[in-house]
Image (cartoon, rainbow, N blue to C red; front, side):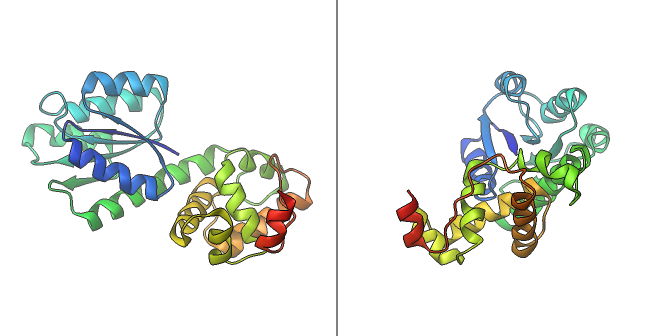
Length: 223
């Protein structure tokens, strides 16, 4: 999942970036309308988080309209105010939400979670054989990143704390990667994800290395 954050306010952009990265999202940040268009051309985002007045009044709405014309994306606006002249444009964009400045952490997290859910639902509808049919396993495994695969594979035989110790990261970081795996694969819980991974492995459709480990010590020995 890739997000493009566009805001001249570096503090606000940094706040959004940190929240998204904790959610397992890859983030690019642009400080101007022109830079955002260039970045979006090189790395098309799944999610746009833009100040509503970037570049000029209503510039964020115009930017969202341009990017949505090229591919379906989810949109979240940041706004210090909501001028009446941009309300029609906002409605036409069908944004996942608007977060008022100064940014409230809880509102920001809730709105971004909703936007990412939209991205997830769209991705699931676009993947051939999405769901748990055998035809869809190979395609869905292709969207699972290396770090998610590593964590989930170890979780097949260990708990979160043991995996964190083995990888040298915090338990929360393990949970964040697990949440990212949920979004990437369309599963909703750890048991559901692990069951799906076992079925995919048994079907011989895995495209990544599957570590055969049952304890952190065996994992080190395997390395």
